Length: 295
Image (cartoon, rainbow, N blue to C red; front, side, top):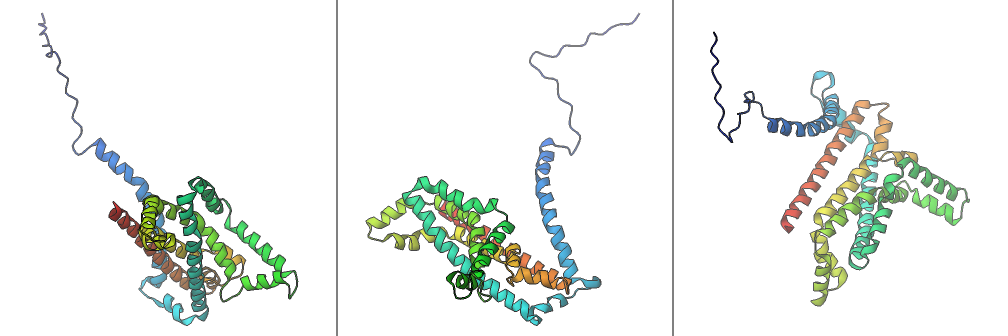
C-alpha cells in the first residue's frame, strides 16, 4: 500500500520564486538595444551611399587616386559656377537675415497675436513644390520679355536674369529658406526675455535697434548661425529652380559634366556633401553651446 506524504504548505504571505531568466538575457537591455535600431537604420541609409560614392571617386580600379579632383583647377566653368554660387549665397543670407530678423523681433515685442500669421506665411513654401515655383517665375519673366525692348517690364526681366548675379535666384532662395530660418530665429527669441531686455535698455537710455544689435543678436548667435549654414547648404544644393531658369550654378554644372566625366561629378558632389555636413554640425554644436551658456 502506497504511503502519501503531505506537501508542506508555504508560509502565509510568501511568494513562489519566479523562474530565473537565462544567463545574459535582460528585457531592459533588449529594449535599450531595440531603441537604437531606427537610429542605426537611418545612419546606414545616409552613410552607405556616401561611402560608396567616396569609394567610386577616389578608388578607380581599386587604387587610391585623386585624379577626379583635378577638375577643380582645370575647368574654368566650374570656377565660374563656384564664384556665382558663392555670390548668390552671400546676397541670399544678407537679404534673408535683414528681412526676417526685424519682422520676428517686431512681432515678439509689439504684436504677439500676429506671430501665427507670420508663421503661416513663412511656412507656405513647404507646400509649394520647387518646380511649381520655378514655373511661376519663368512665366513672370517670359511676360516681361514679351513686352518688347525699351519697356520697363523687359528691362526688369533682363536685370533679374543677369548672368553675373541672377537676382531672380536670390529671391527664390530667400523664399525657399523662409520656413527653416523663421523656425530657427523664432526659437532663439523664445529662449531670451526679449521684452525685459528692451525695456531695461530703454530705461538706461539705449535705442531699440542699438539694443537689438548689441544685446539681442549676440544672444541669438546659434540660431542665426544655423540659418546662415542652412541657406548656404540650400544654395549649393538646389538644382530644380537653377536648371529651369538656365543659370549656371554648381548643381547645374554637376549635372552638365556628368554626361562627359561622371567620376568628376561624383567627386565634387561628395566634397559638397561633406562640407554641408560639416557646416550643419558646427551650427548644431554652436546652438547647443549657446543654450548651455544661457542656462
